[in-house]
Image 1 (cartoon, rainbow, N blue to C red):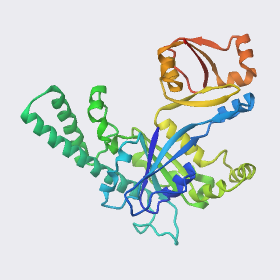
Image 2 (image 1 turned 30 degrees about the vertical axis):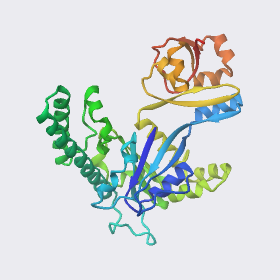
Image 3 (image 1 turned 60 degrees about the horizontal axis):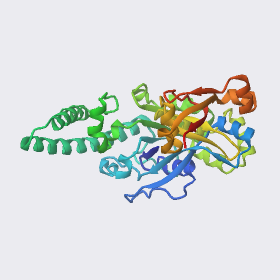
Length: 357
């Protein structure tokens, strides 16, 4: 799964990208290029299972992040990068910190204004794509009518009407067939959006409060919109510490874990993903699948042939396995279930797939 990171210049998005991915190189502010990095999604359940099985490998789920150049007011064309339009979701970094050394490009810190500005640029970018495609469809219909073109014309006309009114396309409910018509356009305001408030250092112990004070009520409750908060400055300090010192530092702030960890979990949830787990002496691993995935389809995440050759799945909730102490004990007590191909895999299921040769 892939997220594009965007934000105004000097919002801290490049620092956040580096912290998430460990990627030292980030998008240059004046170049139309993007940089890619991979982030590991923390999973305390997998940590517990790894401690039990002591495998050779411990493999977390991952996200691919793409850092694009900073957006400037009236510069919506910079959002037409192909990499950004291919993303599954957008991570929009909003500045919530003040700094005399790093002046805000708009002259003052105002998270609600900045999010409005960024959404406007996305709306304008989408409007250009939709208008150009609609013009082409109308020309094609004039030459030769077809049900497919008529359906696309009707959908694009609805989209353009919304965009003309300054409304994003995320709330639109479309049929599977309609989705196929527009999927290739990569419309930005249809993508799930994770709004990330980059708060000041003195708000690190009350990030939830910082988000509440940011004035982003307009976007709360909107479909496909989620929020997270982080202080990139504090996260930089934490990243330089040993694990033991990190735990003490977080305890001093009254926080259970790193804000970056919560951010990644929020991104995972926004895309409707869950993890099933596999365990053994060789590897303990988290596998990403969409919520509602059937067992045979989940098996394909491990190997595409597994879906075709699926026989059954051995399933036990991760906590039950931890409490039992071993898979053998789960079998003895009947908590390791046998499920068929239509079983809907649950978040945190530990699964062993049986497949034919």
